[in-house]
Image 1 (tube, rainbow, N blue to C red):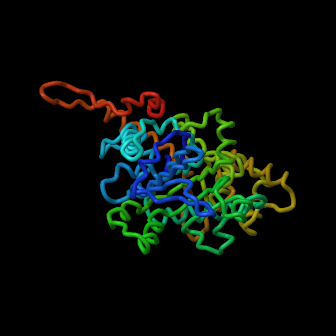
Image 2 (image 1 turned 90 degrees about the horizontal axis):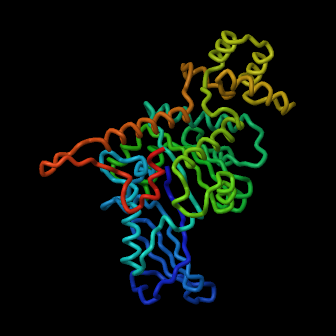
Image 3 (image 1 turned 180 degrees about the vertical axis):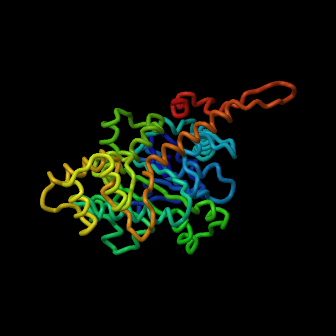
Length: 384
């Protein structure tokens, strides 16, 4: 569930290790203040004066033999990738080994402090059209609401509503920084097709992205501090739990797409909503409320109290306030959070099966046991 991260640690490094492979980092008066190198799109920086080592990028890239895998997330490693039999220990060990080869230091990146994180998940749907429909619904959900402290980049730049839903705070949008949060739900297949205009991306990788809805949350240093306090976790990478990542995905979806209500409600058409409300508990005023939404394509702008009252009733019925267009000819779409739960449960089943396979090697039965190794302190990521 982790994609890109920025981690750092204060550590002494012998300056003689910075040979010609490294690029110099200079300040505005042309003094050398540090060194930088890129390995498989992972950026490593070292600042001599503050003795700060910084690693930035997708750590999962360390496992790639030649090309960069733009589909697989760190959660595929955490939950156990069945096909390639790779686990989190391998990623950690490879990066630690790389740091020793480059800097001649023995360290463990799990003990580095986390200052930026991109949390994301891939939701596999039945078709590209389904991906587009979910993204349209996300954008429409934002458009229906009164936006006070956030900007939807899609609305602001008049972009297509079926390719992405990209939300930032007003301050982050204005100042063009990543100190706070950024929420990005997008069509992974379309993204890679656009990227191949600039980079060499194998067609096989693009095909793997077909029908994938990517739900991504980027948390900068300021917001990360608040989230650590909320979830009572420390600064170090090892303390950032996989299931806390999942909860953050759910929390932000609930906050921005569901107005802080139940993130598991379904999307339905207006006609289906009327039938469900009438069948469960007929409520003429709720019927009038959803009729207003369907007719004017907005929530009641006169009263926040009215909105809270009837949206709460609507969500209690299991329905989202954003209705699907009639021309889609679809009655209902499951919440993406429900699909995320199903994916995680399936991964856990596959992992359990894989862990308990028996291999007959030299007439000895050996259990395959992923998630165990020198980094046993992270076993909590696998066994919940």
